[in-house]
Image (cartoon, rainbow, N blue to C red):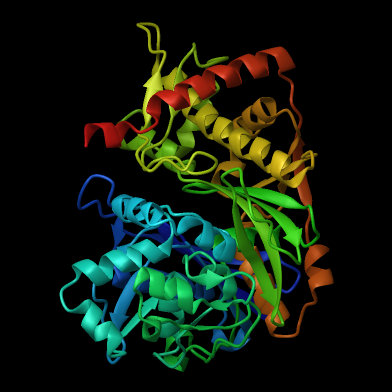
Length: 496
């Protein structure tokens, strides 16, 4: 039997899942790695820990399935996007820690670029806006702050990449230096219309073109793994950023279809077909995937904190394990008037405020940790509603059902809360790890074993949650949520 191997490199862990060609998971392995916080608002990863944890997961998944690399038809790779790495071209040695997508250190750089009047040009070309979230200003910070890096980059001695490029480089022993359009479209210097790096935007940012990887289609040929890594050379035939992979894995291949992935952050994507929709409501235009060089686009709303809010409850001692949150939050009927705005690293769509900070409002002597747990879940659900409302207005459509996946999609209480606060049904698939599934299915397409039509037919719904909250109460709660959000805006900027 031939299998598809998905490498799912996330923000807090690296996973590998072996799938059948029908999209059924056979074996899974996962390894967490350190989160580094050198300064407030800074988030970094050790590049070698990313690589070593991902390699271990791939090897362990094969071991658990009792097969070797020769049984794998193709490998698909999906990754945390925007996280930025630089390494030495000659040796593959990292030249700085990976700067994670959550990192806020480049907020002043973004302000300076905005002051130069460049944002309209960048929005029109890239579908993005100036925010520390994206890779471009992270790379600019590295060039300006790592001694000697700019001079070496201009001499062609340095490689820049997002996590996909870093892993491909290591999997192929440095033979392939490439990315795909989904990851490239998150950098701030990839042109959505030409599907190529934009020389004018690179010049405006002061980024040498010699740094950049080749852009290949999402279903393209990304080489093959070194034989000693997985026991046999395995073709790499699918590469997608994690949120685009989840959209593909949900079978949302038609225009107007969408999904929300609840991971460390939460990400809503709406398929907009063969044209990018440039937003005026704080949403992003992005490449959904490129099949045979033909691009499909999506409208995206990105929230920086979802599962990370539950992680924070654990870190401060309110939970022993993250999985306890469902029972604890379910032990109370409401939050007791508490609102939790989890803006730990600023606010994403539709606010885009890097200076916002988290807040818990409405505390009384009667507030318990159960109320805080439920407020954390509601805080994630309210953020999703913010984005859905903006998306509906932008696209001119009414969401009929929200397809959910990711870690929080296993929390049935949360899904009911989401349906209640959104006012529309929430559906979950049989395979909730659709990010890995999407990467595997894209590899199947790249290997010629699957067609896009077969991918769309792979989606199987497991359960649907319907809203039960009266509309009047839903709207009243949402008004208070918006008031709570406003109290967090610009907080870090005011403190200097």
